[in-house]
Image (cartoon, rainbow over all chains, first blue to last red; front, side):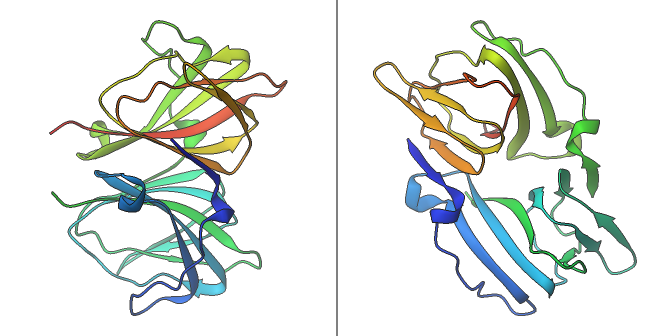
Length: 113
Length: 113
């Protein structure tokens, strides 16, 4: 069993283009023996955002702290602590922090088989 | 995209034996098109617990609110808000609320292929 406070897991720079003022913690991953899916926590500073992108895997998201705006290519909606998102494969999406506190979201992705 | 506050998803009685004063919300599941893994939120009342059990799939857990005790057959350790757990397949585990507030944990499981 792995048991740790999420803030003890290293805060890394995401490698992806289009990210602004955002860091990531891979709190549960293959390194821990997780073969099916990974849990990450994103920390997005005010004015920061994830990329507007799409990919062939889904996201399962729980908003841990703060609030923000979820966008696709046509529309946007605000969200707050306790909201969940399921983003199916190939849907465009972006998460932006337009508030004045750090936005933290738990975001899970599958590992490909 | 599914986007909803987790408290808007129905609070159900778990079907399993050995559960006490615990309810579950299936916040993201196959009903939403999630094919690889499901996100549930457990709400465990003071004095309540999940079963002491084992199974051939893993758990990925984030402690959302409250604090509690994680047990296996030999030992126990306390946990608090913001702790994460990875419980590999076949490890014995139980989560108990020995505090005086509702314990809420996000717990993800894979769907079998």
